[in-house]
Image 1: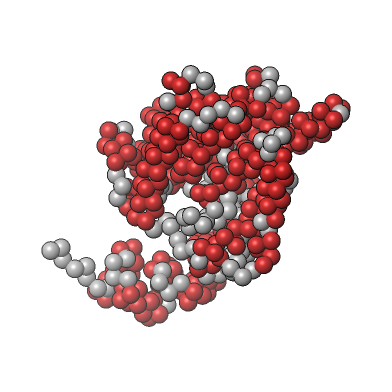
Image 2: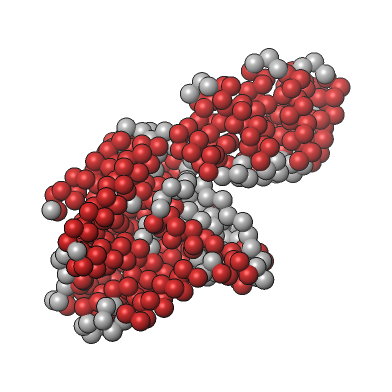
Length: 518
């Protein structure tokens, strides 16, 4: 069964291995990363010890030295070949899923519940974002290390349990949300009805707190933390009510998974937002009533809520309010709940095993399609564009992917969609620049100028938009207008070197001279 389990997971994700780098985070984070390109030991020093803003921004604005070290080694071995990296992502995920299956069997016993829980978790398409997207390397590494920590802690020999804190520390250094993992350890003891090894749990918590302090420091350094959603912690909690409900819906019916999720901020007085917590409350009530007879439903709820806490937006405000990858560890809870339900159905009628079998087959089919989508930027962002209504980022990324493959008409339509959706956001600004460049290359200079003129009004603090407008105006022969635009550019953004060089190239003596070095 173990070999079959691994082979089925590989079959579900095999289609993703043929893909390259997605045009979302993969290029700057991995392919073009200056730290990963360095072969000297100084690169490892930057990875592990440099907490400065420049150092962290060069590595994705996070402190994840385990992930970065693995990728640095890959750069030396195969030059960051995306196919090899995708294969390693899948291998790490398979290993992590095998460890979690072993832990589930040890925690609740071999049988229908453990097997259905393990298979439902491993085959759930929400994990495609972590497995089939190279930027998700941190997720699968954390999963592997948390799985290893759970297996070690589950052993009766205490010498094995003593390894768990180190494994959890490494998991936290792979992905920040793993800091909640120490609180999963006592859940094993509750399932097995054995005494909690508090020194091991305390050591794990201590390591997690220490890593959390570093994560928070880095977050402030690189300005990644934001104000609470809706302006307060209470409003953030209200906003997360519908988000939690959607996570549960995605766990049960993963039809609306998307690489970019759309979330509307709620006010603290939004009653409907608070009512969205009803499914969790109902789960808690049922679990409490069953506690004496069966602890598994309560532990399943804990396995969902505890790993979700770091991304709840209430403890720490994050830039991404909701993401499929945030379900990586929390899906253990719904998977265990599904296993318990299947166990009860089969105990009532053995023929009922067909129901979970069909459910797992459906998960496999959706995961195959989802993994293949992550092999192609245009496909995954075309999917995200269809599943969102107001966000500019999905159509912008779709446009960039289509332009790269030579579909200029499709790219233009996507860029226009991005601008129309939310014209004053960063993706819309980038879409305007891309659209203007596209028009210019097709000889539609006047249209390009009109697009950039509108963008200048919308983004008065962006030198690139104004500089592009000045450059195109000069090329179009309107020198007086171009001179005024360049002078405005230099007055407002004297340090914008690209604009200065273009000004000097077009107007020579009229351009302001660079100040002499002190």
